[in-house]
Length: 268
Image: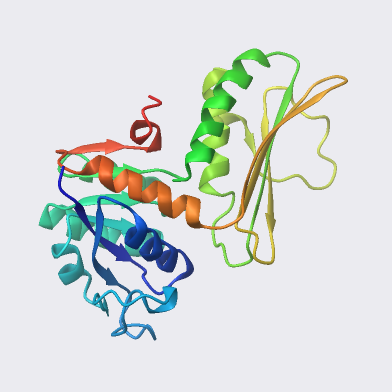
């Protein structure tokens, strides 16, 4: 199979820089383009500069040109920007890997619609370890389906703009599905004041924002006399970037379709 040529959106950001570094190291992936918003300080500079590598690929500010130069665009920016890039990928017939979180229902519908025309991997977390945790949660929820209260606790850096995280929500969805519940109906996103006793069929979420925490997630199954905790902690953004490269390679040569990391990892 030939190498897949990728374009990195948001190239100047923390995740963008990590994606560039991963693309330069990943066998079977070629960094074809990198782009960011007009006026971003690193536009016009070598994409590998911050990693101490000369690539010959300059960070541009024209998303159309960048996406046209690649087979697949990888995007971890903001929902509004990602949807613009998705429309361009759809128009140009390019594959797309979406790690952006915080989409509303309309945004998710737009992604699903695009998947009818181009291949898309859309996942709340690209890290291989996190996707292994999703499978562990399925098993735990089936075993601990009676007599255990479920709480999801997540922590991220101070700059994260959506809460709970997409990963935390997916964890809640996985558990709710295995318990035969709808997360929309049973989720509790905040507690304050006189809340009364906890209802047994709810799934609670707690959000922490501070410092430079990359991403910590714990699902707590609390029973009488025991607690079971399934936890994933990220020490850097590299696991997300490496998973994204696997997702891009998974899309190589594929036709239309909407996939997630469970598909990429063969866990479906």
